[in-house]
Image (cartoon, rainbow, N blue to C red; front, top):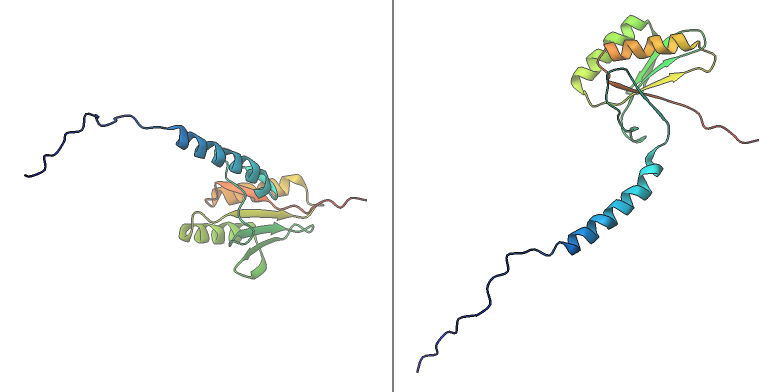
Length: 143
């Protein structure tokens, strides 16, 4: 005698238990809240009409524009650093950013440089296509 199949009286459940998903999300939130302050290693400066960007990873490739106390401009990218005019610096930055638009741009200024010269450099970088610029600082030593 063949065996008859019994029909299940249980109906399929159409609800999803979301409690485990909420638990996972809360754990991830705590992890991000703890690690986010550790990622910041400098001062992030936002240029006018630009969105804020996170500080770049120090191990990644960056474009560094520098100004010394004599008012000379330098562009450090790929290991080369030569004194150039502001117009040449702007042109080179524009060329580099057309190849890699997500490349972080940093400004390194001597502490004796007038604030207006640093702002002029930042405006030139913005005109070259850098939406966000970070400032490189040295940590303060405690006495």
